[in-house]
Image 1 (cartoon, rainbow, N blue to C red):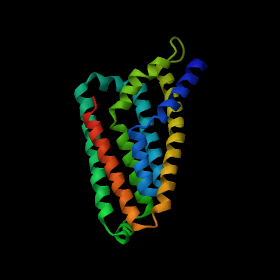
Image 2 (image 1 turned 120 degrees about the vertical axis):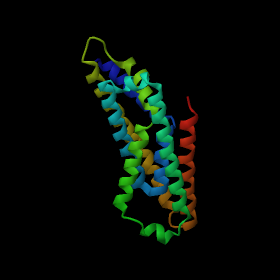
Image 3 (image 1 turned 45 degrees about the vertical axis):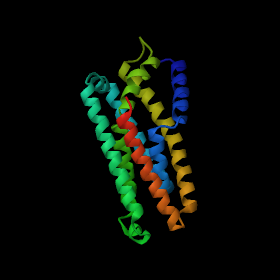
Image 4 (image 1 turned 60 degrees about the vertical axis):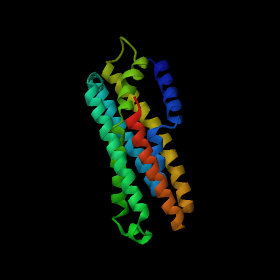
Length: 209
């Protein structure tokens, strides 16, 4: 694999991560609703999902999904349904008294749920599949390493850059949230904002081609 191609891909990943997208909005929503730890947990979940996509692309599963439009559509619908579930559950949580919300479950279980939600949301995003099919091949070096090995290396670069930038976004959103969480009214409004973001992401996923 050529160094120039690797550096070019890294630069492209930075630019792509700077553009607000569903993943970033998801992380912001969890950072706003769950504080800094919630934002970081969401970023880690997104990175894990990207890791799974990378392995799938290296094994050729992404191309298989792209060749079966019905399967790709099912993935999209499943992701939208899951995001709608997050929107409704977050809205219900916002309507409950602060004392009740604080008494529910441990902080560890909440972070685990956030992490798993991020993983599933990333896995259900068909645009990540298309990314590996349309964008990554442009940086593959013919006649060099095996294609699967090159995809794994490029995927690792994407994961590291994405985790650093997404983690920063999650921390920033969580820091903002921490400044206003002392006031129950603001806490409720932040959760409602998170619910709106989740609902908007679901509608976007369903309406995009």
